[in-house]
Image (tube, rainbow, N blue to C red; front, top):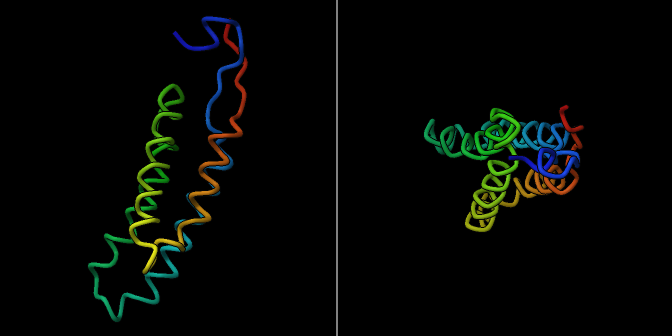
Length: 114
């Protein structure tokens, strides 16, 4: 039973615009870092740079009821990645993390279905 079913209130879901902005920013950061590191680090760097992009894509690829849970999980995992990788590339993904958090805290409101 959702919040809308129980009390007639609007169901809260992370705002897709913010989630998409976070994904696009992370993809641009990863492309820029890929261009900088590919020659030095080799093709293995592609896997490392795809992880944040896939984390940010996950909430957009899930159905609405689970989207909030997946987005919160992505925040936790991306936060860990930013902190652990702060000495190297982690801080480049901090703006994407902020956009993701804003998308969760400023949800889009869906009207309850009759």
